[in-house]
Length: 227
Image (cartoon, rainbow, N blue to C red):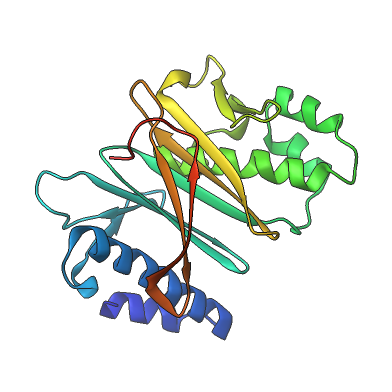
């Protein structure tokens, strides 16, 4: 890590947070070198005013995009070429209340969640929340993008999709959402800007002790190659 990254890690009070920061940096640096070559220590990053990270010194002519998310027990990195991309992960047992949806979500999302039994509400809420967060992170606008100006629509057995209010200037057909459970404890959502057909999305799981060792491979729906 760079001196700035080491200094940032040192500011965390709890050891678990320092470990999570270290693993997050190891993941993105190792993945970039696995795909692009070079020493993991060479990569230089920047962030925009909303905190979205970007690669400063990628190979010439390659628009490398990435996004990171972490929660208790899981770190995720989304990596792609020539597109906007965002990822969000949450622990399924996270405590959530209905008031949170009414405060932040669109009227359509609130109406749908109001009909969900209490036992199912946390899971349905987090499915919606992760998809919304993935989109916000992909566009790089942070919470300057009002959460009630767009909705996540989920159909039985289908991947979620986006709809926008007239107040938000974006094209619903330009976005692909994908979501899945990661093991028994987490849910993950990905937002990818597309042109035409869906992109192919590969999900790879790594052991935290060896990022070079691939331990599982799954594929989400999508007929077109990721790159």
